[in-house]
Image 1 (tube, rainbow, N blue to C red):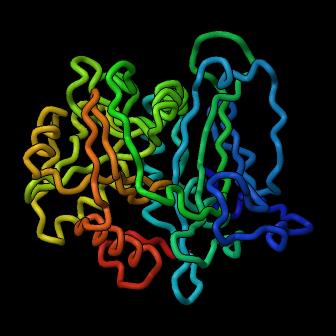
Image 2 (cartoon, one colour; image 1 turned 180 degrees about the vertical axis):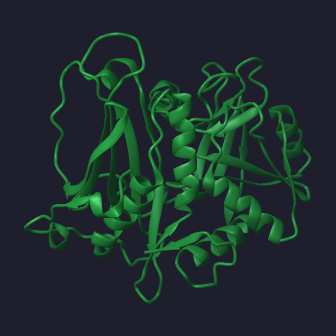
Length: 354
């Protein structure tokens, strides 16, 4: 079993931090000085190390490239007013990562590597966490099959890594969403609940088509009737209808169990709102909009945090919203941010101190 003492650290000679402007830094385009890397070989995890961020040397026959055995997670680290680094709910992402690994017939990553390695990496790179509003350090753990062979079977060898990227706001303005009715993201019995790389690759064509129509993302519907809402391309979705908040349930296994989604549900309940996790049809949403009962619509995700939706298109029916007049979405965003940035006490045990 790997211990913290087994994690070898090789530091860069010169940090790129002094050459990087962290304010309003775009998402996913700049990376910190170091990364964590580990290999699964002969049935055990080995070669666990933190080393300078650099390209990988891979065989053209690397199995992940051909057969898609690849998973990932998204986590964020923040600084409180005292400059201390905290990670938001990393244990939940660790558990979900291994749930994805099981579904994709990949080995689970031990806590000693995932959590302790993450803690060590963030500690080394703490100065990369931006100290600006709506900024954070995005954490990307991922694993892929590394067998050097052509053949459809689970690999024997895997590589696990964590890279870090300082980021500003993911979505700067309220979003326009297109309800997708032709293509599907997931079906019951599939891998919709796993954070598998292929889920995102398969979604790109539909998203590109929506962007040609002037929309930012798609809202997926169920695979059988294209009637019930699922999730957006990069986030779970919530609807405030009348005095209730409704979000699609997870029972079908077609929706990612978002950590931010779960956190928002907790916060909404503290505000005294009635929350329902259930099937929600577009017909019900349209009826609510026409009757004036559809009050607010927003998305939640690690990258997106809480994103306001200002327009929703279904068939030729366009629903537009004045997001400045919303109440609960702004409250939830404020509460979540104050917890993440250490402005108010964390009564839920979400923030993991480094």
